[in-house]
Length: 220
Ligand SMILES: *Cc1c(COP(=O)(O)O)cnc(C)c1O
Image 1 (cartoon, rainbow, N blue to C red):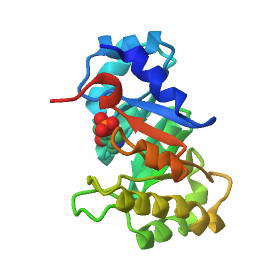
Image 2 (image 1 turned 180 degrees about the horizontal axis):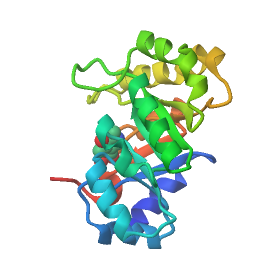
Image 3 (image 1 turned 30 degrees about the horizontal axis):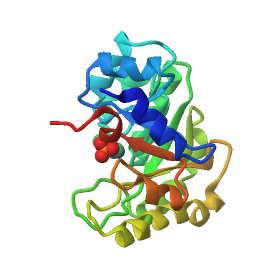
């Protein structure tokens, strides 16, 4: 494994202020430790159970990003440590994250997952759902969450024009929903771009790229 070289190669291409989330799902803690020893601290997992198990075995100063679909009844397991939840797609989920954050005397960073892909299978809210969520007066009462911006996944296709168009749509959310910014709602992050499309995502204003296979190798 050339994890350190892979990290270095990718980091060289990142503009200042962009966070590289190393997506370690399905990979053993030994490989995560290799990235950690190379100085890396931001890791992404898509299953809560797997993230909790790995967190217990790894250094405390890792920033764990939940990038997968989140079931409300499992939020409590990651609330003690999770740094950012990228896949928030309902007010009910935000309410639960806030409740668990209060219990742990923490504030949890959240991103709203917006559906930008044309594929049916991708999770996320459309612009109308997103507007409804952000316009809810209840948001201001959820004092232990911070809505930091938006997350999206482009269609899985070789057509980079289509991918670019979808990323543009996500980027525009920051402006589109600017009027909803408040104490716990500040849109300074856009989580978009994976191994196959992160260069395009960066050109379209991504501030967080989520990269797995180009760092750790392909998955089963
Ligand atoms: C797996 C995954 C990634 C990383 O995918 P790669 O193609 O391996 O870079 C990024 N984002 C999400 C939401 C994922 O589930």
